[in-house]
Image: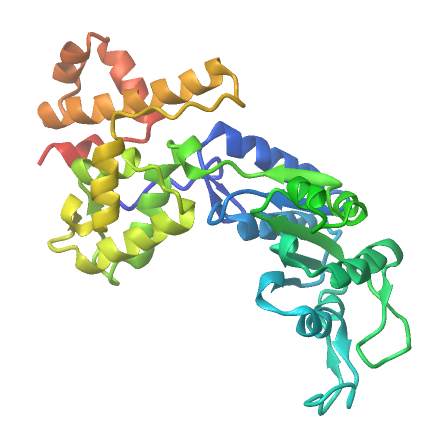
Length: 338
């Protein structure tokens, strides 16, 4: 696959790349959210792109003229209780050892914009109470201060943990959950949107290629990428493509350029179909059919060296159908003519 992949508006939504119908539903929701000030909670496995969706919500709001302030992100899992309080609310000079001056917290920094709270499930219980108060009253005091500070901030939370389970375990406040969970966005894992793998792989190949040295992904390598379950999701795919770009030679990414765990695990999982009973069978059958159809076409094009007529004969489809499907799956048949 050539790295000059089609990144038309239908694939690129505020720097989130996808041709998956599931993601396009999310894009539509994000567009609607941009016209309001409601709190958003983004769920999804690690590496699915929760911060990118949060930035898309912010960008949509800015485009609509609702949020002209900055996008400010904080990883709640990176701080203990005391440090997180100072990080979010700021502190006054002398409020604790090392506080040599006044400092504005992330809430103040995000005034008029968006505050992204990543990994909200890791917020310590005492801080959950303080965060709830800010969400309710939109005011707070800096650590060591007493003057109330008002802020106009859109809050977007994100978590890879099931907050409902944490609530049952007494680790997360139910009232805070309902304050955060006004508009819910649930990101599907990469394994449930395989049609995005070629798009993202081509993008990352272009991103990490040496300047002036574009890279192609050979069909055999693409088949491995499509077969891999990607437990680390988009982040893992990006890391794999960065490694492939570093080790690639002669302008092509081959199977041997991919990380060993991706190559070996993909070979073992290649014929295993993932069953998800939480989703309708017709929906999953559509995805499986599309994934298999694209692989079939790529192999047929490889055998016929990109000849559409002979590919049609092998597949039993009309030349017109093959041409339409090549366009549908964004396959560059020129790469098979070599």
